[in-house]
Length: 182
Image (cartoon, rainbow, N blue to C red):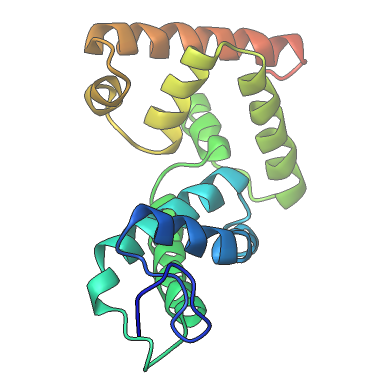
């Protein structure tokens, strides 16, 4: 049987770009919705889908259509990715924890207050420049170093540190404008 990008029996062939595109078209939306429900974060869900397809592409030679459908195999990979991302996220400080640490006080456990604070921080992040937002999100929320983010974005490490410093100042001002004080 010739290998086509989409066959009724085997599904997309993941070893090439066209096969990956076909697999994404067939299953990407479903995988995103599953990750979005599990992680409760659109950005992290997108990251989960990207990582799922990357892992599937790397392991394409291990996929056996006799054992499972491509959909089942992709969801098994996505489940592992979601677990990895959820664990990584739980080990990093969240925006409300950062505020509590900064204030030196105990962390609040009122879910309504935490939701409001998270919403306020998100709104403040939307009001600052893309470069400042990227520096804050990548270092504080995703736990990456300035050097790592600088290398990925192609800017000098000193520039990334400046973006982080001035981004935090801008975020503080944006939050104060909205009446949010420490």
